[in-house]
Length: 73
Image (cartoon, rainbow, N blue to C red):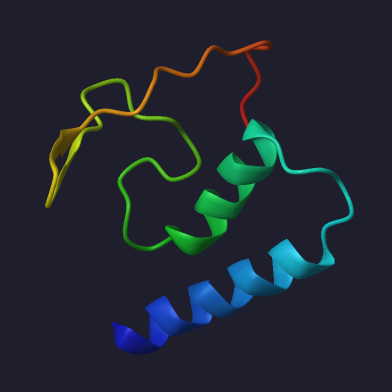
């Protein structure tokens, strides 16, 4: 399993450094689809539920992203 995760991280890094398009939501979804390929149930998609995390300063809930286009990978 560690080997698969390392391979996916390497592929994600290669994608990130070789991609010439600007960083946007579609880029991040494509990168997530590569890195989370064998570990996430729905890789390359945004979660619909709560996405808060616990920090040493308390709970942090990031702002909700607004989609400009409804495009999948």
